[in-house]
Length: 113
Image: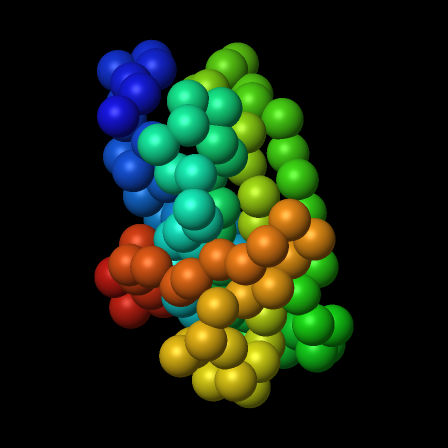
């Protein structure tokens, strides 16, 4: 497990998830997305955000570069879904251009923020 700026990928993912729930009142839950290459050093943190009040768009990953100045040394991918879309994908793998991801552990919820 890679550690940068004193944080492992999972610690960094938890901090990002909590900050997104704290910052955006529409973000209700944040889950880790897991792919087949999670052990690769350059693998991005992937977050699935369940956003109340957003429009259904399907799966549209948004990619971000590492931002060490703001405390994130990892590439980041965010996928926003509506609560209805989340119910649809909850028990399945989420397709993306390079394959698919499974929904992993819940990292933050509106109640725990």
